[in-house]
Length: 247
Length: 150
Image 1 (cartoon, rainbow over the protein chains, first blue to last red):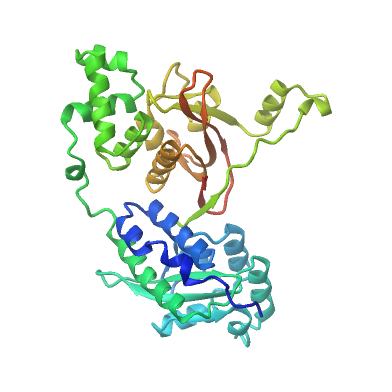
Image 2: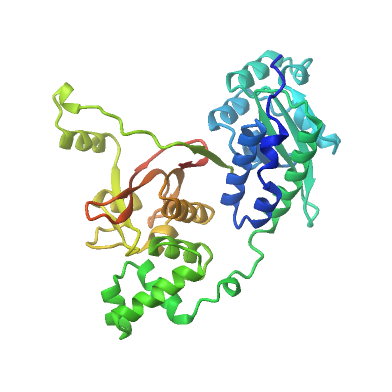
């Protein structure tokens, strides 16, 4: 069995993850936060998956966000380990956190695939971890997991990861319901200039088409970028597109 | 569909002299292109303009046009579920002067959905301006994925 994690709460205390999760604006940012949590707490693998119903047959179909290697997931499904997975069985029958040792939890599998399962996870150094059941305001159920090479024996770490898991799923469920345009207060001319640059127009072309001087166009673009909190036009155009402020 | 995420450090440029196997540097890229279509792209941070080689147009299933391309059209060519990831990669790389690698889905005008891998890195041009440059190629993955390069 692997040694206990030597990750201490001292490092973790220096990172305000709950605040960072709450400030995340997209699935992408949440992925990054999960990766950072993994680095700080010594649990490099994370996943958020919806809770399987009776019709699911493959692990791949459950993933919402994850950094598990695609080869691990593909091999897991090829070996048909899903149907008799002790983790899935636990998640279907209990909302208690599941702290697991990959060897112990795969003992006496109903499909006798103990060794196949253990060897697969050993190959990726995914030996210990924890699953938390979470839900959102729509009553949808999911499971958030953190895993890695070392045993998670520190109770405070488990409590914190559980807290983060709830925040992560709540945040993940909230995306798409915010009125983002009002947040940035971009004026029509600023948006128009950003739109034209996004269509491949240079400042000169924007100026010719709008009748505004190149200086004025530059100023609109600068203001737009500044309001979006961006330090370059490519950044501003990308963010405006992502927020659907321009189409 | 699941989106995998990773963070990794920027690698040093690999020193691999193709002349050791009697291949000129210019031929090396040509040779790669013969096995899989690879396109090169460049995005100027200050102007906000993006340029593609002809190969990128072919991968997108579009006719070649000279000059800057429409970022809007380029992003909308991706699968609706993947557009935000593409934009976020560009945003992060531009903001942090870093890079990215992603494997996502392109929806071509003929209706075909193709997987592509794109890798972008920040650099300073010869004129001292910041830009992102990288390549895009067709790919056959198992899942979507994205990697931030610090």
